[in-house]
Length: 595
Image 1 (cartoon, rainbow, N blue to C red):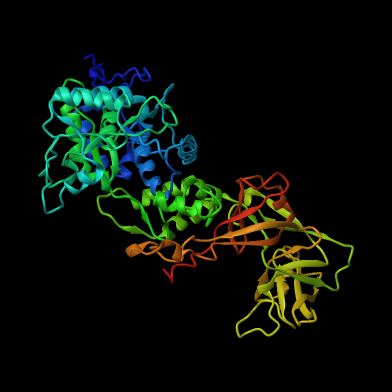
Image 2 (cartoon, rainbow, N blue to C red; image 1 turned 180 degrees about the vertical axis):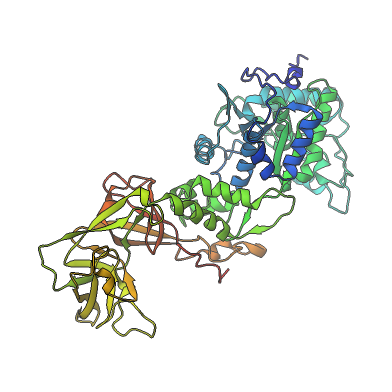
């Protein structure tokens, strides 16, 4: 048997998949940032570098299956794998674990690539792009399986899936060996090759590792490593009808790519002995040389008010509970991006939650707090009236207007000012007027004075009502010497300060008020139907009036709409000159007391 050896992978030279060379790379000024975010994984890497185990190389990987869109739960693993490799002057590979042809698609590959790049990471080192697919290794994986058959380490099992499941045992009872476990290597090799040739139906045979049916770790009880599937693969077409399982494929892919530290979440901790078993057996067979890739597990990101099961996310999409994978209510990276979340805020949240071995729940408010922190300093302000009520300034000339001025950002005078007109008819928020105000109400009501923010002081004189006694307009008079920023304006002492836009000049826009998709912190707790926890107010669409400059916002431009929160021009529905706005997050956490 002619097996291409990969001994050159341990020398520091990259194998011929990409023909790149990785020199030992010391950490320079980034040493301080590495130390400042110290955790148990970095401690392991530091010890490896001191011992010279890998020289100075650090090579990680992020291996998603392209069977759905990446979600916020993946962000922690992305930041860990790409971030650690970057900080140590190494590289993180993007590898698609595409060994399940029934569920995988190029659409998901493209979405994953877009999501990782948007988060601020890449898989390049110099001129070499480390983008891989497990399906690239099908020939090698099959050859290695044949070698393991010849060495008596794997066998063809002719039991059906139910029989295999029922004889695997439990946590307290050992498994029962298959009656086919002691087939000869010659018979196993013949059957395996006939499986590949398409001579058997699906489920007729599988290939299993021969390990220990009495192991306390059920993963070691002769796991299945190949099965028959007559399904066209999105990359290899109908070339193959046998496909390798994840546990077999993953560790070998790591070794083929010369990964040093294979970082994954805690649910794979019980799979680590199997990871090591395959690599050890292939090393004994002369395929690899030591040191072998090291699997290290950390706790996954568990966020309240979020569902991250791909099956349940698919149910939301297919059931039309949301408007697609990139719906701004979805916890997918695509959805968060369209909602207006920033890559910096997601990375900041992941940094703050840290890398530990302890599983815990993180309140969604932590992500929103990181988001507000990132948005506040960066983005301009604008005025928007989301629930409009007409305000008529009776003593202002009908055909007149004048310019009012406001800062682009209240804490950064160097960013300049923005202007918008004042006129006789304005829009104000409906909640800023109350005909019969409660005690402590300082906004507009008959006989009361307020300041129109950045404009004049006005005094309410009356209202107009329709036939059903609904208020349709409020009347007031303005004081011409009270304009904000002019001499004498400080002579007017008022407690209320309300937002407004000129009715004649405002930009009338569709605004989508998004909130958390679920009303319960743990939507699927204790096996409940998570759909019962959907928040009926997670999306509200209103027609709003914005200061005229907002009309010039381009897709994915963000701003704080004063008083209401942070908003973004929707990247899908906005066009130049006609943006549609999504609320990213409110100014304050309205869920803290209810969560």
